[in-house]
Image 1 (cartoon, helix red, strand yellow):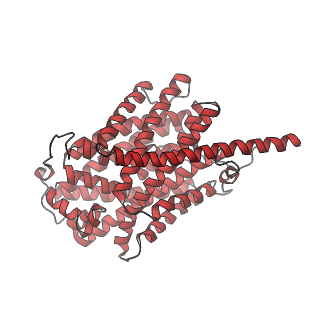
Image 2 (image 1 turned 120 degrees about the horizontal axis):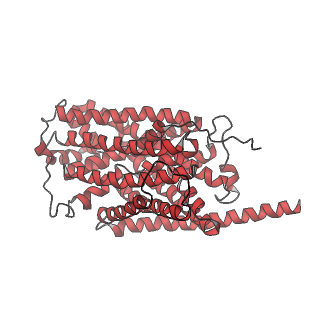
Image 3 (image 1 turned 135 degrees about the horizontal axis):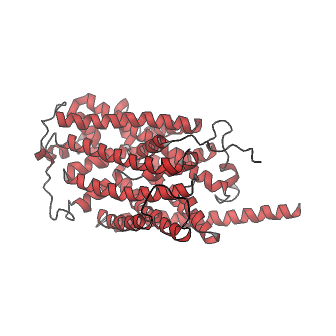
Length: 470
């Protein structure tokens, strides 16, 4: 009988939705959404709908895999269950570490976006790295205390940041602020060249930013081992979360953008309140409600970053925990990482390791947009992996546990095609730059995966020899 503490099944549909939305509706999405709307006007809404479809298909595939294999490892666990033997073991390690490393890039940009907000909120001229560290520590604390504490903190932060976004959107529509009366003409951008693929086109400029408004919805699947009814709660929570995100982005963006001509918004974005384009949400707050609006947007940025970091420090340590349970995380290191706190039943060691590793890129970076695009490139490639795993799963194991998600192969194949379509156009002209970054990151992960696989095999052989002697 195993007397070791286990992860506690205490999450429902609402918690799944909150986890997905809290991760996605980050401070960096304020940056990407306003940059998109102020560049393309109403045409950015078209890019948002396309990105919604891409992420909806991804969410359906991720939910399907998570229902079939409800463990904390997510992508790592799916590959291990579908592909057996040594090849499957190595592939699962590579995919798990790829996802973990990609999130490190994401959190570098997200932490910087929130740090700008906290710095503006407090008005104390300290190095940005101090604010990044403070936000990260605050996000780790509820995770150490337990998954229910994490869920409640995430829900509270989500209500705050969604409330602020809807308030500014409605303020723009109804003229509550100091900007002009809302006008449809303010949303009509004069695009250069072709509407879809020109130098300011919907696909070539808008989609890369719009994609970021939804990316990460599959994060909730990493909590599957703690969901009471994953067959019902995971797919419903993911779909509901995506709908909430789309509605919020449309109301906030269209409401705010229509309150001033695009040229005025662009000038404000590049001004001192917008940190030269790095924090357009602060410029929006100041334009609409002066210093009060500036602080309100700063508060929303801080809440959004805290929400994202809190969910990240819930999901990513559980990936490491799942790998460690199977003894594949750098051999003998797995024993320590696989431990749960006896009272909170949380993977405390894995949380602290994740915190330490994620602080490295976060503390040495403040370029929000650049990191958003770099992480998005790798993330889109991993979307293709999710869909591909569904195809293999349904082909190899036709009787595997199903959720209410329908489509199977058709959803996965459609997801692969539209995701590759989005990747091609979203990074048109920049594949060399961001693709090379992706190759660099994945190359490093490949070396780590080989090392981890070798160390795990060596550790198992050592344990076997000791057992044989006994």
